[in-house]
Amino acid sequence: MSKSLNEQPPAYPHSTTSTSFELQDRPEKSQPLQTVVPLSGLTCSPAPVECPGCNFHGMTVTKQKIGNTTHAWAVGTWAFTCILCCVPYCIAATKDIIHICRSCGAHLATWHRSGHTEVLLYN
Ligand SMILES: [Zn+2]
Image 1 (tube, rainbow, N blue to C red):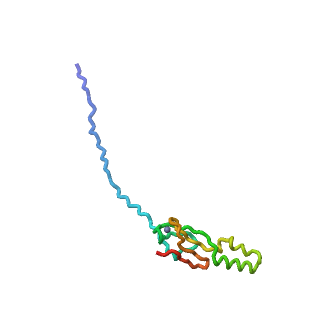
Image 2 (cartoon, rainbow, N blue to C red):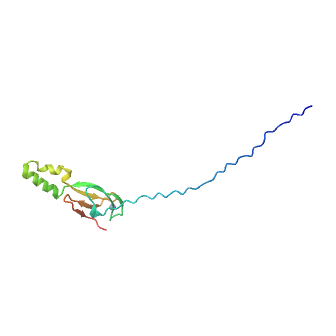
Image 3 (cartoon, rainbow, N blue to C red):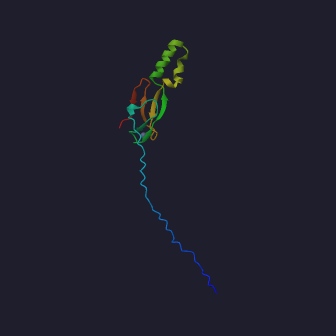
């Protein structure tokens, strides 16, 4: 009688997968602060400002406004054409730009075509 050896498969040691929890230090996302433009430095385009009225930080809302430059253009156009004096009132390039607070609607400043910025709301 031959005794069959019941060979057992060698028991493999349970491989323990070492899971290491590595905390990755994420650099904090600091929002880049918008450089605030002083009201006296506003031009013909919207710019980030701090509203003196409500301390709102954000872009201004710009609107066109008929100003002295528009009238000057009207006079000049009238002098040359006698007819088209109303044209400058339709051309945006001759109008002043008013800056309005997006939050409280305050009229912050007016940029004149002459290059002068008139600040209307102070701290
Ligand atoms: Zn405001």
